[in-house]
Length: 120
Image 1 (spheres, rainbow, N blue to C red):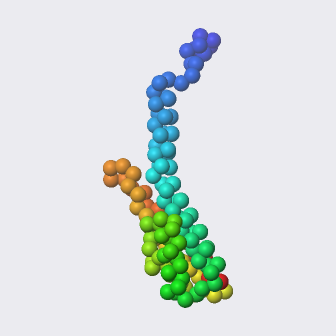
Image 2: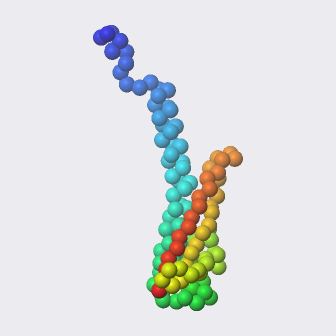
Image 3: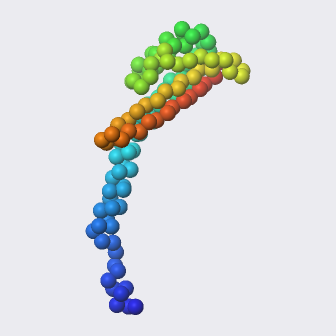
């Protein structure tokens, strides 16, 4: 029993390589995916800012949203893709879009974003 215990100290090089490969894979995923989520955060804050302006006319809402998208460097979606729809309590500004991110080879990640804010 004691003799066997002396030979089992720590991990082998192969074990470390496997763990490092897994960690590096998740770091790579984060590097590729985090910018899309940060841009979605900019879209949400732009929509909230427009909703506070107390404007419900579609043309004016799109103009305000386009200006905020330009300032925040939003490229995944255009302001004209936003929809104004009827909601409980008034009108709502809604954005739905998909973003495809190529990871490696023929493997891609498809991110589906949706956000809605009530216009005041």
